[in-house]
Length: 352
Image 1 (cartoon, rainbow, N blue to C red):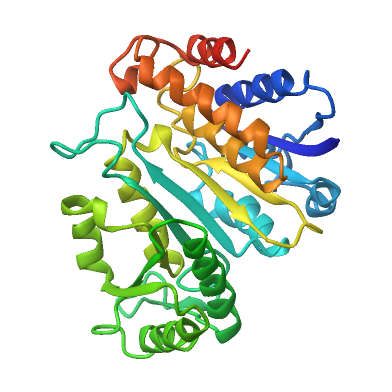
Image 2 (image 1 turned 135 degrees about the vertical axis):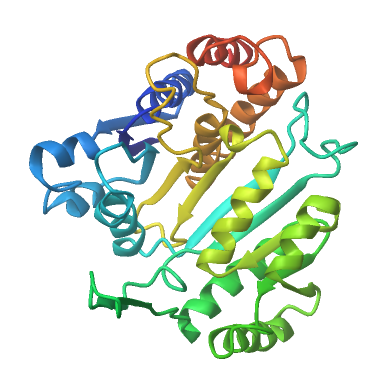
């Protein structure tokens, strides 16, 4: 089967880790019955500097013809973050209804946690983040800029539809895992309207899944417990901002954001989902063959799973974990001396 994959290398180290993803896909495509049609798109901050937009007017339509999107990273000095975010990432997530942001937090064999005396058996959970509304809404504005009365208002939008679909996904995900537990983040003791509404949606959904044990955590103590008791957690769900913060905190305890993959998913296969490493464009190390490609390769694994290519996903993840467990070829952020290309070479040798 041929899968049509849109590639957006983007900026900074995104352009260095994307070749690692391509090499893995090309290696897997040597197997009978599996192929990938790869299309490259130059959407980036460099594209913005040349054209005044992060992508062309028909950019979404160009991407729509694909089965999945692989993104490297977006962001570069000189282009404000809100321009790169609102000009590329958020339109893709919202136009394609990618309302699930899925981030696995797992300490791979051979990696050292920032937490004392914690091993792979202690850190293995999923953070499911609502990806289309919440605190990242476009409702609000600014008044009286430059004056003492200057003010900004940002609306936090939580809808019943948005809550139900992300919670349904989270409960179903919890059902698919052995522990059958779901923790959800809230702040209803401080945020008067939106968070109690969110809590009510969880309470309404829970009876549909009587086999799942549901635990409520205010987001501040949940963040603390991810550090002190990561072994308590299996599946965590939160609104857009809370999920974003928690899913960056988690990888910091499991080897760093260089090993953190993510997926922006619409469960409807009629539109593409998008897969990307969490580490950002890191322009300070770009061009030095320093970037850790684990997050990018793991994002490819997540894409393969979404495309129902489970054997290929399992084999690639197995190769990746074999290399980290061996510990001989590791990138600098993991205490080794290998570059991006050398680490990828080792993964491909293991895959081969």
